[in-house]
Length: 100
Image 1 (cartoon, helix red, strand yellow):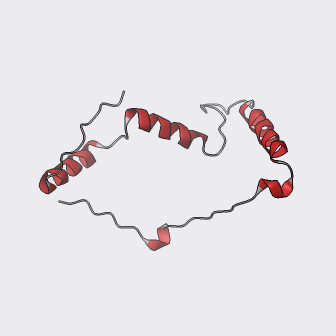
Image 2 (image 1 turned 30 degrees about the horizontal axis):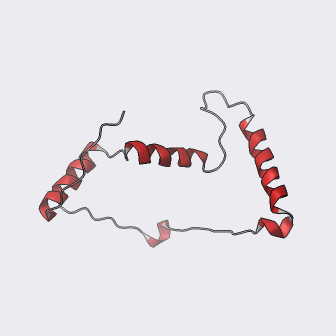
C-alpha cells in the first residue's frame, strides 16, 4: 500500500520577519551584543530536571547534526510500510542502521 500524506491548509503556516541589524548600528556591535546575550543565557543555571539552558534553534541544530551522522529514526511499522512500497515500485531502499 503506497504511503500517502495529506496536509490541511489550515495546519500550515509561517511567519518570517527579516530585520537588517545594520539599520540599528554597526554589524560588529550587533554581533558583540548577540554573543554577550548568548553567553549570559548559557551561563544561567538549568531548571531542576532540565538538560541545560538552550537558545532558540540550538536543540534543533544538534538533532540535525546527530541525524546527519547517525541517520533519521524511523518507527519499525513505518519502515516495514516504506520497504513494502519500495518493493512494489521496484526501488531498493537504503539499508537500515541501528540507532546507537
